[in-house]
Length: 346
Image (cartoon, rainbow, N blue to C red; front, side):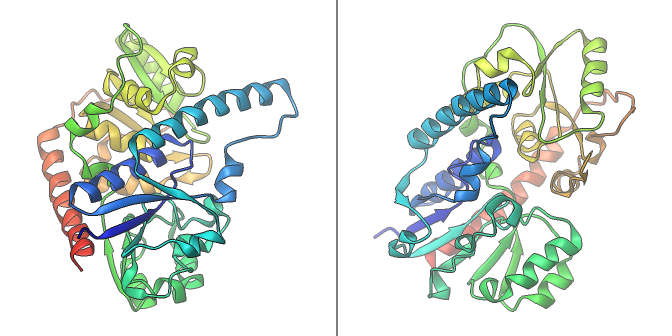
């Protein structure tokens, strides 16, 4: 009989990266022979994050677009991810799986979840059923360590804790008494061909630079304008382009990346999927809120720190040598797949 595994993640989000990593982990676990479904858990903090207050016409229009995008994200999840019945904080105690896996993405970032401790599996008593995969705290240094300290009792009750970002390895090991390891984001568990299978059709005929923005960048848009002027390619912006807003399904998002001549981004998953699709890309790691160590850590892991751009920098047209990058991705993928197999076989 196949082992029943329940994955707790951000399946209700309308963030493309969150949806893609949820899809990838579910598919990878099923590919490995488990009976895996993603737990359809409703986190109130994430539900609230999908909308803004309608105090202006601009805010109203933004909510209309968000509702449209949310609809297509929900459809993608329903059509591509094996889901459990719906659960809330109270009813999830009635769920039953042979093992629970939380991750990936920023499931342990209290600013994302409202410190919902369901993501720490506080409703499960059996330690041998509790695992994380590439969980991200999403905060820097001392802030991240403070989260680990505050949740030490819950984390020590995991059979294995798998993190995505290296924080301060020695101090993490000192703080926690359970097994701690580091794994690559779930999107890398699937091959480029697997990602192309769910990629949408090309959205426009023109050659373009895809600018995928999260939060408040510093010089990213200016760099994209400079790149556009030098290459002659038009800009498709996830924040401003009507073409993007008309083609905003998750499958379209993959297409925008796959068919771009260049990607300019400050997003972790925008970067990760650019790597998977073998695209030429540039990343702004330092924004208004400081250094994005999640993206910086990924670039360091794969030897791609030369893709980082800063305010006012010139364009480096050096091409990415993907043969070397693919080898590093494969080494990390192999190790992470071995960990998932151990969960299934334990």
